[in-house]
Image (cartoon, rainbow, N blue to C red; front, top):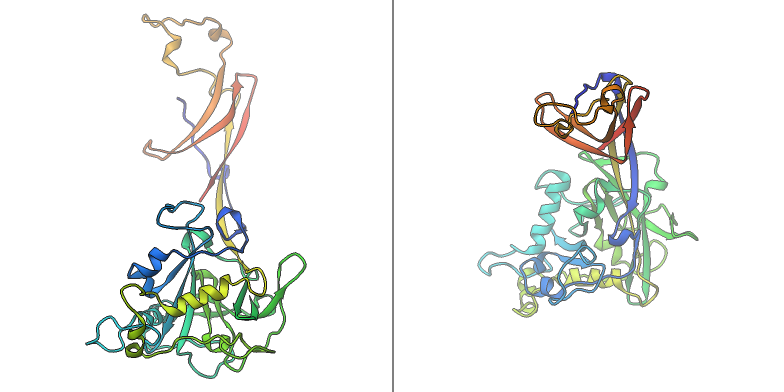
Amino acid sequence: MSFGAYNTEDQVLSSDSVISPMWSSDLTTLNTFYSWSSQELNTLQGQFYLNVFKDYISNSIPLSQTNEVQFSIAYGHISGSGSSYFNALVPDKTPTRDIYGQFRSLIYGDENSAFQFGGSAGASKDIIVISVSRARFKESFNPGSLVLQLTSGSKRITLVDDSTVTTTSTYIGASRVYQLLSGSTDAVGNPVVQSSLYTVSGSYGIMIPDEGLIILNPRALSLPSGSLGGVGAIFNEFSSSQAASFFSTNSTFNFNNRMVFDMISSSVVATPKFRLQSFETISSRYFFTRVKNSEFNYTTNPTIIDDNGNLLYTQLIYNPQTYITTIGMFNNTGDLLAVAKLNKPLVKDFTKELLLRVKLDF
């Protein structure tokens, strides 16, 4: 093994933006949606959120890379309505109240703010959270790639983000925020904004790409269909005490989560569609490994000498030759940090020089 040091001019740092399909199996558009009754009905998780899969899943089919969770749905209410309380002796402490508080703290950074949607003069009392699996969205969503179709009965609306029609970026804290508008798709499936106006209840929601979140506005979706209308969805806003009678040991799921799932997966009007892309910045460091004609011509393999220290191959005396197969990268204390393999051995002798480029992505 022979060593050589890299100089500063031998290294170059580069960054590339990579846009990829969001969903498993390299799908940009998700058309099939499945829930898992075991998660929805038989676990505490089911009271808070509903996991959504790309492929059919049951207790007899184990989770795998192809049927892993794509996103989850969670309904939240500022007062705790829409789900039963945890304990009858502690009124208004419910899963929906926890969901609202959790995402309020995550997005606004405090426990006193309330969600507001573009064009709305007041705070929203409830929210619908679509949280994309962390492994799916990587660094963030790709703004301008969202197409989400929602169907209620015979009414349908297509939602897109406003990144293609806004000229300034909006932030909540350090997170970028885009409003959701009524839209459609062009001939190749790309999102198109139909109207940049908001409903009387504000925008249809917000997209927070850096957090992997889409927050829908139930008040806008509850509006009657029509221009700047919704789909007439009726969300369960029973008080926690009223909702308790609708829950039992055999039915512990959140009704609003199930209703939103049905709105996303419904094929009554058209094939369901949830289109989204991921975005990530991949930084690469290039190391240019220069092998001069006078370097690395003698092998360090101990098998070329016999027990008495004599060279077994005399031709290596006057015509030494090696084959370079691997580049190992070490730190200053001699610890091996990375290994680069060549696709084929390269012959090296005094008549040859080599320039090898090693790329490290991180």
